[in-house]
Length: 347
Image (tube, rainbow, N blue to C red; front, side, top):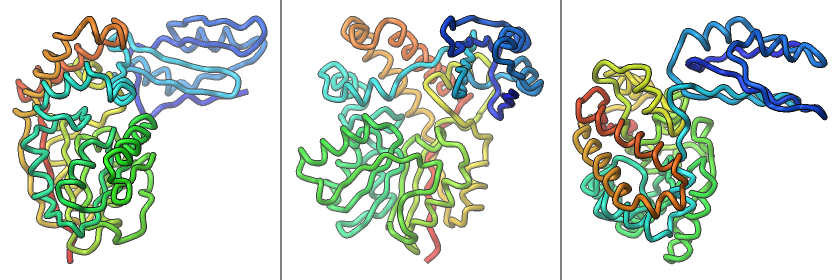
């Protein structure tokens, strides 16, 4: 039996943990794919593609990979940065007092947010999108729904929020019902890197706060945003992973520790926005604000270390603190930049 493990996403300094599904199966760790192939040759031969071995040992940008086969599970773990849980814990514990306190101290207002959006930017977004009470709005990456509900209540518009995270979507729909907004605001679980679940020309505005950097295929995502917009509709998104200077592979791994990320060279977002068919592109540098949010978020969590460790465990707590420190350092030094992009669909 052959099993091709060639990957588009490189894995630095990989060590393979193999759990063979048989009666005497256990878990063994191998430094090299070749060792793994030899071990599995009896009773179940596995061929590891040389491309995987080359990529795994040579390239470094992603901290982990997990591939599942019906009979064997492969898990590669980098020696640099382990994956850190941010979103599941934040959304599952949305109603917790300690998480609410952290959000209030970080942002000055509680929308259940886990982004780099300041309160000032939150208030500016409806204006930039020219939202009105009769507007139909789509948020890509709504998280726990707090900001979408704020927009709907403040403007009076209808809004659909999409997110891949099930606890976030569940929490968002519960909040909509509790606040009496379920008739105008709805949330659905969706992988926004695939086709959006809406008809052509449905929305007056589409926005996404610090989410597109988590999605593969940005050209397709922007094309889908354009498709679901009505003629003359407005689009807005932010990206906190625009490369502004030299980055080490350790820094990239640490900055990527909470999940999948795409780093963009300067000017690439503008090129892709134009290529998708948008016009009147406007760009705002919000890097300094992102640096301040990272600092306040880290400090707010540190003040509540005991309570958060009790919920998250020490390993996850320290991992997230390290992530926030990395964000603060890279944005303060402007080696990673955050920009807000606005554009229109032709009338």
